[in-house]
Image (cartoon, rainbow, N blue to C red):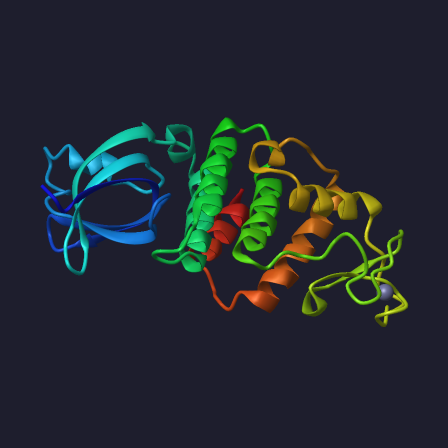
Length: 250
Ligand SMILES: [Zn+2]
């Protein structure tokens, strides 16, 4: 068939259509983010059911119609079972996927974001790094790939390098006390926090998840991410609300 295509990607989200069908959003290497319709995917004996779940990664054979893609078959490389077996990890993964879905588009080159999400789910499933740190690293790197890279190598205003900085989301990065008003209550960022930000921005995806941080640095990273996302991403993520509920219970 001439209209069949094979695309490599990961399923970001799945919604139910009617009694037996599904629609899923696929982030692909070749065509960015696309929507796929899977007929009969919820029938009991359907082998399509298992391969059309969120976070499934592989090569998807699709029929390309005029307005939409229809699912034909898939060869799955990774189901991320260790993520799916842990409710807390699922909550994080759902947020990571929803964030990626919000930022990506069809026909754009989203290879880096796909690769980042894939690697992040692997690390999440491996349980070697604390989930809140994975979240900060993912958010910073995702926004950098989207074109919203934080300036963390010198003061955003005067470009001075050095030791004492505060974070100013509205200016896009770290700022020295000569260029911004620093209140008496406010503390300068820990130098390890600035180092960590620089590492996340400059390292490649394979080396990204290779460190741990102190509780103090973790708190500063969380504050920075929250402020930065509030400033540049105009969106309340449903999965983030769910994640915050899960974290409050644990
Ligand atoms: Zn400055």
